[in-house]
Image (cartoon, rainbow, N blue to C red; front, top):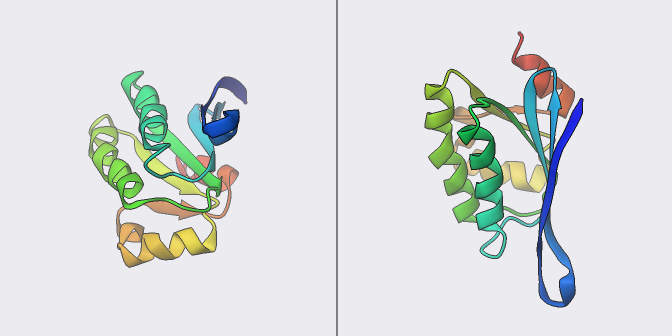
Length: 129
């Protein structure tokens, strides 16, 4: 595992609104997000994903274990990037989604588009399955 990047969005008073840590595990890029994905943090959420895709890293896992909320625009970002990732021969897998957030993925039928895993290691291993 290697550490690549950490960035965050600051709110009023310098409080962190969204943390993003990028690591590499078995040749798969893992983006671990912490915080709400909403209008204030959407740009950084999208930039984090786009950075990885632009580099040509088409095997990507999103760790959402510390994301209590995703706005509709956040779901839109996921839909906007998936085709490009798959066109590069890769995929985007989603790990450790809190149950209340996963319910929204189900309501939107995103569970038909993305693969979900209980943990990061299972999602990474699925690329070699």
